[in-house]
Image (cartoon, rainbow, N blue to C red; front, side):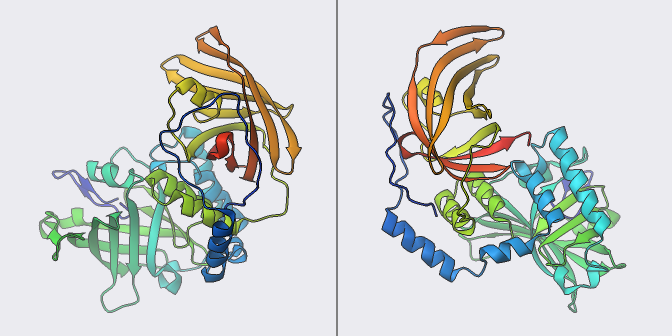
Length: 402
């Protein structure tokens, strides 16, 4: 969780898509098992206009919500699953460097006295110390759950609460603590109550933790080492040495990644992302390795044709017009397919993949398979790419190692 609580005996520690009428062709047909239907042009246009007119957050507000240094931290978090649980050593290093830069800029002075710290914060990243409890590993590391912290200090009953939201239909677990301001950065807290609130029950279910009997184990502190002047980003460090990154206003790329991680409302998240990132600039196939994390059609009858059409694995884009698809089949066995891409229209590329092989260690077994399709880049930056490829299937890729 966000505040730290170690209990040795109990093992607990709360620590719009633009429409382009382009023909997509392929020499080989794949019969889909399930395909998400895309809205028509008029329907999509109406939806986007409604989103833009009704939204309280427009593109300019999003850009102003985070400074360059804050965006550097946010970018370093894109693609990390489990709020840090899956982070590689290199990713952890990049995050720590970005955190250090922000902490050096100070941000809002005396954050515990600022009204900007008040409210509900969503946890987007935490380090994973070896003392993390089974409870923390179960809840915090699962993308399907949302984790929040509520801070209300400027009241007669100052409180800090940690919340695990299972879903809108199931409910949440809320763990509350009495809080006190120690200085301009530090909040002292003592856990005193916890309960499940299930949507299908008219009453709360107490969480069986004897806080009054825990003594000092129910106590802790939380330092706010950075609070943005916009009040949208906060970095905190707990008494157990854990670092937390929290947000009030989530950056659009993160909302999209979160939707993909939970498998909920992905098309709507893409609509929102595209509406906030409309640009007249040409979108390029940026060089690098791109891992596919979502497509509107995930299953086909043939995995090899699935892989050949970019529905699995990663794409390696080279600046000389070469493209490679790479899929891990089994341990030590890969499917590799090489080809070329050439720009044929604004944001649209002709792709031909014609050199396939099943690779086992240093050996390769050639596979005769030729596939052609048009690839339309709807959005691309140095971290994320949204495109439309074979049979108008929508893709979201994350750049690996960028």
